[in-house]
Each structure stands twice: as structure tokens, then as C-alpha cells.
Length: 113
Image (cartoon, rainbow, N blue to C red; front, side, top):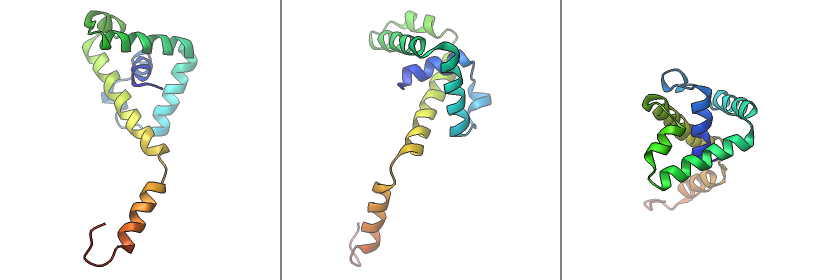
């Protein structure tokens, strides 16, 4: 999912930063999938594409019309960005971390890894 689609999902769900910022990754993922079930995947993709096109084209009024209300729009943007970071952490491979740790622990004395 794109950040734009996630913004649409969190906005449609009425998710607010003040009440949702501390939810776990699993809880936010459940909210996302529940909202996709409500809206339908094609609707989420369409709204996300329209948001992206409006922002890319500097069509601020159109963007504001898609996500009306400064506070709600800001909350949707913040939650989308947070969810993306959480998703990356939850799904990243441990291979890079393992390789880094191995290089650090096997480096000759006095050599920075």
C-alpha cells in the first residue's frame, strides 16, 4: 500500500493521532484491513491515486477536498507515516542486522566495523 492509500484509509476510519498514536502495529494493521473491507480495495486505490495526483500537481484545494479538515488530514498523514515505519520494522529481514553484528564481533581489535 502507498502512503496516499493509507492516508485515505486512516482518514475514512476517523483515526485521530490523539487516540491512535500508541496502538501496536497489529492493532493499526487490523484497522487498515477493516477499513479496506468497508471501503473496498478499488475505492482505496482510487482515492489514494487522486490524493497523489493532487499533491504531485500542487492542486491543494483538490487535495483538501479529498481529505477535508486540517486536523483530520494531518492526523491521517501522521498515522500513515507511522504505520509505514512500523511495517518496515515488522517485515524487514534480520539478515542485514545479523551480518552487521557478525562483522562487528569478528573485526580485528582496534578496527572499526
